[in-house]
Amino acid sequence: MSEVRELVAGVPLTPFQRVAVAADFCSPFANASRDKGLAYINTDVTVYLHRAMVGDWVGFESVNHHATDGVAIGETWLYDREGPIGTATCAALAQKRLPPK
Image (cartoon, rainbow, N blue to C red; front, side, top):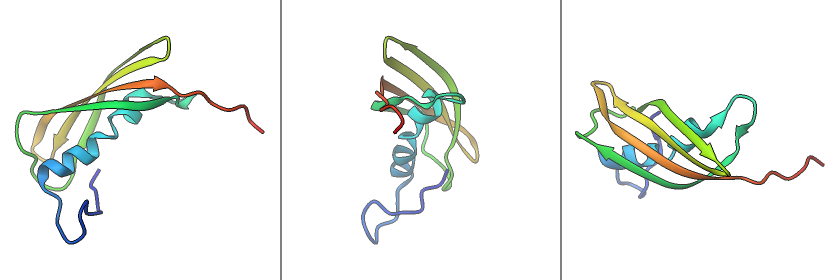
């Protein structure tokens, strides 16, 4: 993904800001399922980078998801055009869905 909006008007995103904004997608990537969709609300995201990002695109690989009694954790590996840059981990809580009308 590549964010196209600025966080502050007139100020381009830094490489770190670009990764931090993208990392919010760790939870839907790791915790969504094909049959139930996204059944969790993102409560926390942690980003670990071993180097600065190069370019404007952040790639994700969802590598972990576990859930018990309404609490889920997930992990995605983060990439740029040159390869791995770090990980994003997330914690999430089950989302109560309203019955269809």
